[in-house]
Image 1: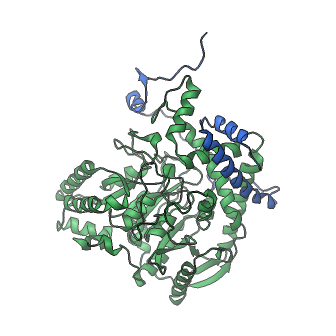
Image 2: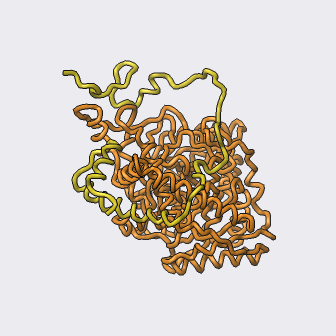
Image 3: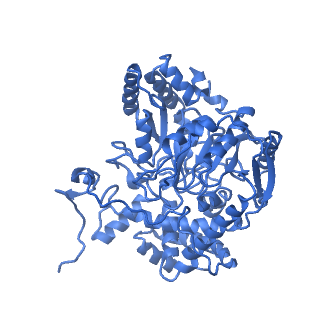
Length: 488
Length: 97
């Protein structure tokens, strides 16, 4: 049974189709693993065992009838941020405890159309605000490679569960690195698509001009497969792009001869872990040996990205989170009048980081400060976008580390929000520019912690990024699941 | 100091947040240092640069104005903390003497 962990979705689908395994067995295999290992990892906020078994039985019945579906019978873990009909959806917040959405987010609808099995709801930073999953109001998820360390965030539950083999694959969301950074720190593949490529309908909003949904998987093939399913136009999301979606799977296995890789000179920052630097440089050398070439590029406004990001994301968050008022859904704390009720509800319902961001965002949008902060940040965002446009005149993809360090210890950065924010320096500019970015496991540091390579592409060029990622993965056998989650 | 406790309290009121006194202290210090960090943007000359409001050139998305099914009242109010019939129920908004 352990070999099931090393199979990609296509291989699992073959087994299911040939009836060598049933979806009920496969789902049971993952549920058993979750019960055994999640006591210490704490990746799932809630296991939806009955729903999973019902979906698995339905899948088996369909398979028996000869029906097909790209995910038919395949169990996935879901970040607790997508509205899912009839299943409690909390965003890891006390504010939404008990919230049962009356509809499915578009991504959930698409997964259901392909026949997936819903294992449970994965932990995250509250409302996706954080880089360590320590801001969840329910539990602190551990990194499977070292239980004293954080899994990254905000999609820390998704990355940790995928890395430890507690689901076949999962979905996350990325506003400033929330897919790529945890994917990197847990040694999994993660992709943030071009802004607008995947519908955000039914995704609980944090910062609407930055949020994007994407897969977290144990291999590039599954990433391509899930991208093919979730990408595409949706009339329910006015920011959704109408361009056709290529078959990403077709690009896997194509060589990378002649591909030009841009290396930004600004990305050798102070505080970069030497192991991270060396491992990423080795990966670049691999690409050169396989027919790619490198070119130095400049992204001169990189140093302004974090400040720009925290103005824009907090402003948008303060506005998006105004909906939590104790009236329509979620928590209510009684007050003497309606304003008092709002304030008491929001005091009790939101955690510290969420409140901090609402205060910052409200401040930067408040009368007299709008031009100095929000407008200014929008202008700098234009400059950051232009940097990338210039760079892509000279190269096809850009390679950087995902994170300047490997996973840090729990509690290490919680007291100083600014230090935590700065750990996202390599991922944030990609969201600001609306570009696709992915994290690919490329090795380990001296302590055995995973290191992620970031591949940044031009708008809607996900296929080329997957092509480059696949070549690396196929030739470098980077270990995926930590030993302790394979046996013992 | 860019901001004081009074400013944090005022902004919290605008954002309809009640804060504990120790939270006001903490946020004043933390938000102040974050704002100071954000000040580095002033080093950049952005005169005449259009602020980016959307990462992709998507503008004015419209749909046909056609009536369609939507959520029932029951589905729309199923999560309400308090309701009366088909309405959300809230505490008093206007004081009656």
